[in-house]
Image (cartoon, rainbow, N blue to C red):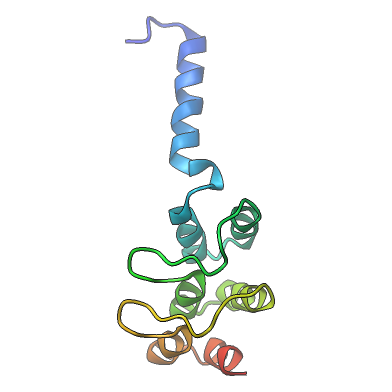
Length: 116
């Protein structure tokens, strides 16, 4: 138990909060941010040294994830990624490029952006 000391509790909550958020520094969090199309977080993570083309254990990149979801914010994210060096030719574990993913999902606007 924390002996009821508020300082210990506050410190514990801070540590748990930082662990949960990974402070924006883990490679996994770039993929989590991509699901949410959180461009601000992705910019911070990349500025911290993670490659815009980082592939997770399934060889997915942020561009693959944006192509999969295809929502308005993912379209904006896709445009930013392409302007910042995202490689459209990288393949995931199923041998699919982001363009293949967008086409398979029927995300026509992202497919068009990726094919231009």
